[in-house]
Image 1 (spheres, rainbow, N blue to C red):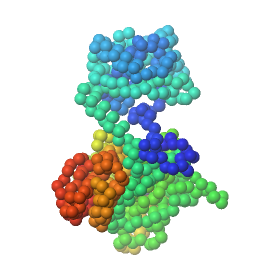
Image 2 (spheres, helix red, strand yellow; image 1 turned 120 degrees about the vertical axis):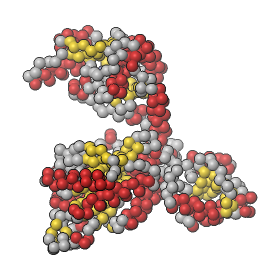
Image 3 (spheres, rainbow, N blue to C red; image 1 turned 90 degrees about the horizontal axis):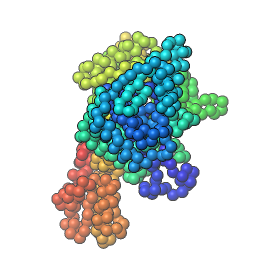
Image 4 (cartoon, protein in one colour; image 1 turned 120 degrees about the horizontal axis):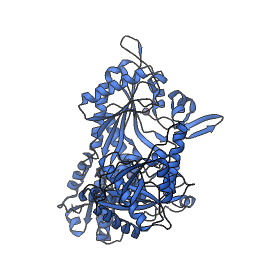
Length: 627
Ligand SMILES: [Zn+2]
Ligand SMILES: [Zn+2]
């Protein structure tokens, strides 16, 4: 996604962190799906009382814009997540000064406490009203509705409008009762939008705003928004030299040494957990024949997301998931009931063909690696296995301070396999969730095409919800389509159940979320550099290297700042890189062989012998303390 100089940057020296360009259009912080059909255009997005207030604020904003720009033509103005927008066709581009003027007029309209009044007009009268007011976009919506009604052989319904003060809009509502009920608001951004999301139609200007019931909530939201911008992993990760993005491979990060340390450390922690639970790691090919995807069902239901490669007259794909190949490994031996559960983990490199326009940082990528695993279990083992998996999730998330929340996602409309098997899998998951005593919500029809699942969510430091891990109970895709069997204690062939599970999910996405959650200040155990030793003068460099050696012996990641910069500058540089510990060495410390560590939060800790300091930090790192 980074808009670097394309080909040039591939051969030129890597851009320094300051130069690495990370564009950040304002509107990316908003979730506002494009609306095309007349029905979508008429949807005010007002599903709750808060939404109704937000949409009402959009009307008040449109009133203010018409006041200031009498020839303005109005698009639509729905409520969206955390706010609202309205689209306008104007004679000139809006400026930040315009937003201030619009806000002022809005405040006056709120103070006037106008009632919102709904009226229904006969279709002809309604259309004439918007023609007279020179609002061609509204007329177009009405004409579309009339055409649709005609096509359906139904009468055109009356035209519903909402009025407050002198302002009138084509609208189905709902609204608050009076403008005085609108809470504290703020206009946030101006961006471009096309009428009906169609670039061949007129270009409009979109104004985004937010409104909340109380000033405290508005202030909290504005803080979260500013903080989210500051922490944006696309910028912060580049500043911290963790990774970069380049046009030569859209949607795939280039991992730098420091980012790779975080990656390997997360992987290492997961491998350690998996070893305790008797997982066995496998590794399977990335380039796979279409034959496999036909067998798994991906060819029919997932092909548009796959990168296809033809060679020697045969069609191959880069694997979008590891599942079917895990089944191939399962089938290489005859399995008995005594072999189960079998837990195959795999850090497979996956590719999914996302539209280039949808790619963004580490969260919307084309290439990623999951901490994937496929568990093959007997039906009588399933409940205990799911409970153990929920425990794995809780443990792994405790390493970074996340509290998991659980959702049960059931059979989607687009599903493969016998409905009876689906029903059974859903019953088994449900029973396991109930037995675990964990709170969960149900998300109907949100399962994958081959399995119902448990999705796991967390809230990050800014209160944003992320979907992370998933545990899928598959009685269909792997067991049936790959004809997996084991022999039971009577020598009969039985079907195992396959559990697909990932705990971090995509490592790329997980790290992107962590960068923002910690604002780059990773807990000690994950920090790419855990300590910086800072010699005050050149004559202290040898001792600094010696102390670094003492720390490295204990497996710690250490740098010595041997630059000729002044001490204060070196401390500031380490703080900007969010290094957990800094140790300044001068004559006194070297003579006593002591360290007076300074934390990145600025806390000066008491002097202690080098070995004591090294042992303490090594222990802190091993125990994965967060904070
Ligand atoms: Zn409305
Ligand atoms: Zn799988």
